[in-house]
Amino acid sequence: MRVLHTVSHLKPIQVAYQLKNRFTKPSLLPEYYKDFRVAETKLHFSPLPKIGTVLKVLDNEYQFTFLNQDKTFSSKIDWADEGYGKLWNYNLQYVDFLRQEDVSEEIKLTLLSDLYSALEQGALKLEPYPVSLRIMNVIRFLSQQESSDEFLQKRVFGEVNYLSKHLEYHLLGNHLLENGFALLMGGHFFKNPVWITLAEKLLKKELEEQILDDGAHFELSPMYHQIILFRILEVLDYLPSENPCYGIFHTVAKRMINWLKSISFDNGDIPHFNDSIDGIAFTTKQLIGLAVKLKISPDLKTPLKSSGYRKLKTNNLELVADVHGISPDYQPGHAHADSLSFVLYAFGQPFVVDMGISTYQIGAKRSLERSTMAHNTVTIDNQNTAEVWSGFRVGKRPKVTLLASTVNNIKAYLSFDKFEHFRSFSLVSNTLIIEDKIKSDKIAVSRLYLHPKVEVNLIDSGKIEFSNGSTLLISNEVEVMVNDYEYNTGYNCQVPAKCLEVKFIGECSIKFLEKK
Image (cartoon, rainbow, N blue to C red; front, side, top):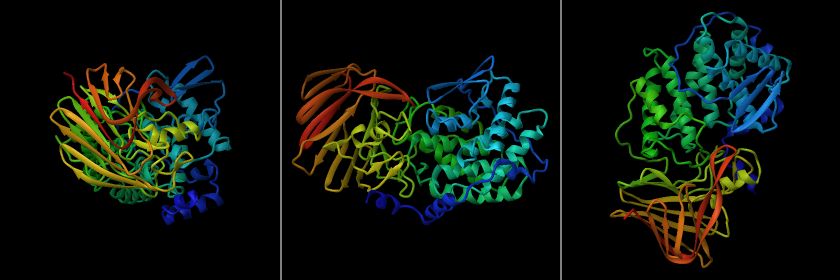
């Protein structure tokens, strides 16, 4: 039944392309560049913020660092290495080292030649997603070279040609957007009107669908929103302003930067809802800086609408609540069972946090990080409020209804199977009140995951004091426990922190009092 519930939400085009991909295999890279003709246009790219060290070279050894995991290759690099999993290997294939200033051009060219040799010989297979990101990185690199490099041009041409025939319609979502951005850049670099037309048509359609009315990317991951926003800003950077599509991208970028500013905390942090973590995308502050250079300034205030996030704010408290269900219906790969959860900052610093993600590897850790009990909301018997399974699948989904939303109050209702949960967030003077009602006589558990820097002093079951001077008052509790958990600071990187578990039956009220 779980598989049936999952598949029933797919679009017909996804099913069709899943079947097509199972029975057709791409050719090797040389097949796609056999019709190559020299015709390239160096595109204009503004400098980007520096990246961290992803490559260290010592004698004949190459040490790559991705997702906080190091691997050293002696003389020969295995570009298909999946010892640390698929995502690590994808990062290896992206060739982000091209943006690393302390790596010589000679080494960059040597590594690119070696990677393309692996693709030509079949030691590394072509896949649309890493191909897309690699195309954009290599074109940026080639555009900054004084002389032309026909060897690399031919191979990038082959990759763009391959991509034009292998767009990820089986997945859709952010993957298809990345395909479109790579195809558009490749079309302009190689002066190929067929690729440009295909990319423009794809991007117009997908951006209209994937960017919601409040400017959010519809997968509702602030991190992936940052990634997609950067791609649009990158297009605006190299695309001439007189291009007919320039205005479309400019309008979308404006909406997306407004949403990002609205969802981010005052210090620039994003809430780690769904698949989000720091250190992967450009930060909110960096993206706003890039946007301003393109004469796109965020509005002072933009209301949050159909993204399903809402914010409450006092002088010292900032709360972002998740009052939506699973989105998008047909591509919930980055969704968590986190409806009605929240993130709270106090005095400009993280206080109650989402634990974030540390892995995409299928297993117990990935399942935990997507589960309801890993978020700041309520469970009974540790059951999920959405049927998240495998690494990126969702079967049955909750029904979530927003009942009220004002500057001082948010009310929402969730139902899943026989579980029903009413939750409200209210600001009364300088006090934040969270009220929960559960239609059950079983013991429910409300969890509050605290930032690692927050220390806890449990005065009694109804009163807790914190190191930031805040006080928590709890009503109708059965028991309050302080437990240990691992807070994710990045992929494969955790630090110890504390979690409050408030057990109650029926109703519970939690009040956050600011510093005295």
